[in-house]
Length: 124
Image (cartoon, rainbow, N blue to C red):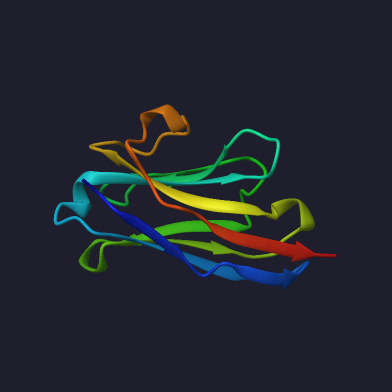
C-alpha cells in the first residue's frame, strides 16, 4: 500500500507562484511514475503533469505547458509541481497519484494510488 500526502497548496493572486509537494510512504518510490491531476466541483478530474519513475520523461497538459514544472527527488520520496504565472482557471484541488512501473501517463486509470489533494485558489 502506498500513501501519498500533498502539501503546499494555498491562495495566491494571478501571476503568482506555488510549489506543491507530494511525499510517498513506500520504499520503492523510484519504481513509480508520478502524476498530478486537478479537479473542480462538478467537473471530471483532469491531467496536469506526469513524470516517469526515473525522472527522465515528463509530460504536461497543454493548459499548463510552459508555466508548470514537475520534478522528483527519489531520495526524499517526493514529487513536486512548481506552478508559475498562475491563472484563476488553475483554481482546483490538486492531487498526486502513483503508477507502478509507469513512464508518465495522462490517463488517470493507470494510477493505482491517490493522495487526498490540496486546494489551490488563484484570485484575479
